[in-house]
Image (cartoon, rainbow, N blue to C red):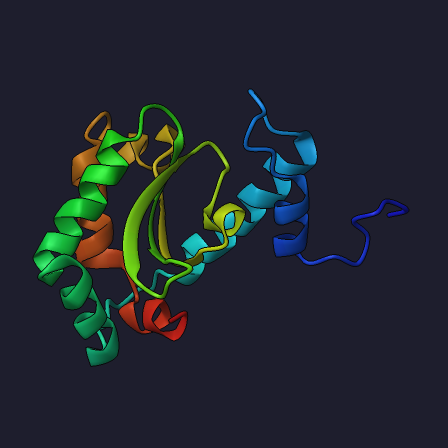
Length: 155
């Protein structure tokens, strides 16, 4: 309250506080971006996995060759993220789908991309159930937890 960010959306605050040249991001960026990251993370999961809508499946096949190739690339991005961060399926500024990874609280909003799916690869997300087996966590996430209808709705 009483700051230049009062009344702004999370996306506006993220865009306004992200500094690509900073060694460490500001406190407001870190807190707002992690709030945003976790909101979308929870929104993309559901108790009953849904089948992938054809619009999303076709876009994934066009961009990655197959759904399995997408899952491999997404899992590799998440497993390959050194330290804390996120794996993402994004709609890029040119409309194409891409898999990316970001460190700490950085997210696709910082780059003008639309996050379709994000997976938290901070240790606290998987360590109790999967120990140091981050690839197994990512596989479980994609195969058992993602609500693909919610992902498609972001396209």
